Amino acid sequence: MTALVQREVRTFPLIVPIAPYLRVKLVAGFLTIAAAADNEIGITEERTLTGDTVGTVRLPSISNSVRVTAAGAIASGAVIYRANGGKVSTTVVGTAWGIALEAASGDGSIIEAIRTINAA
Image (cartoon, rainbow, N blue to C red):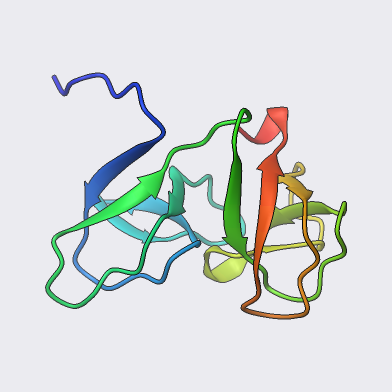
């Protein structure tokens, strides 16, 4: 049995590089980018490079804000949802993921957001 993690970040094994601030999931025990329909395990904290064996992930929490990558333009205060490529958008996909605390000018913008209770 693994040790209980009682902190905001945790490392997970990976085999491919992943950009920072993307939603990620585990597949066969390794980190991979989450799609719109996937429930993620968290958000990458930093860029991983070829040859890295672990990636740092910010675990889901409704008590902290997080940085996320937008899939398109988002207004500050908008309700956001999961999007493909580990990103978030205003396109409704399932239940709300969170609320944008900053505006995003377009695809690839990094913004601050908070999770909603039903998404955590």
